[in-house]
Image (cartoon, rainbow, N blue to C red; front, side, top):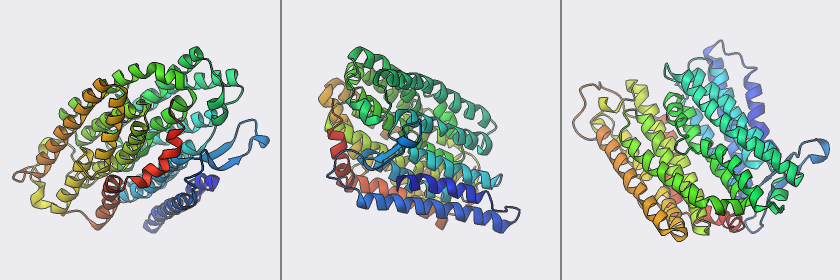
Length: 481
């Protein structure tokens, strides 16, 4: 089933390449075909969830082709990777619908790129080999580079695409060196074998730094965060949604799968360093968010702050903190795409500007937009009954158990997130109508259908968190170092 899950988007992209797009009907058929492929992929992932056995530790649905290849071709899934696969497959059709009418240039290649990104993201979460993990981890950069550089909405999109590519590729070179050293020391790059191998503490510390540089860049954390706001601001709508919803979670998954599981002694040794960097990222990004004039850049900086809280929870070495960090990754994976859809899709499609100072009083013209924007903003700043609130409380409580000072400083991020979230909502929605805005229709049915699942998912994680926590309990319990 896992290989089918990966191959479906790839085969779909290949079949789309055979469609003639010289007519309007052909273009429409390309979009419909891509949507059908992603819906079937999402359905298969939901089926895997229904047959997944929560009482069995370790990997399930394991498929191994090591006897037929010099590489260790092995696939498997546990509770952590299952949730990230579900996030990927359920978010991709929503991204397709979000950009249904926004792309008019090279439409076929655009939807093929989205399908290839989906396949590579799924592969990252299900491979059971460090070398394959690196290959898929880096392969995502190629279609992402094309999304930003070709279909971006700014004259500076080429520079933003280069920053995205060069920052993440350079950081990942250190991870490749670390993986090769693991192969030399252990004799294999299989996840389970490396986790059980007796790597000396001194060797772990060196290997940990190689992996950390790559994952720190992808998270991203200060000072290696420069590429993210630019990539978000210049990416097309679906690219911004996928980048915030899933691509940023590759670092979270890497920390869980590699740093905490395979290098536990080094993770414990470097925890104070990680906590300091996470706190700096949290406070700096939250303060920088208040100063943004571009709405997409504001949401991008808020992602940096939220991911810093995720890192604090992951390195708390507590069941509560790690579970909270993973739930926060999922909650951010639905809330942030909703905000990008609202500010980079709904508003930009109507007024063709993302500059905040031009907006005011949208409640007068767009009450449905104002309501959904309020719900998404409330979830983003972590109000009770939202997934962000529960996950942030769990993450910071776990960090507090490890270090009370870190937990207290980290809690300031909740206050700062409330500052920029409330300010953005009141600036856009409240007051009298801005003289710069002309008449515009409210949200269309397609836009509402895109946003409702995202908002509902964020609230569901806050109201019924046990649906996720039950899946995470066993894998996280075996992760504590």
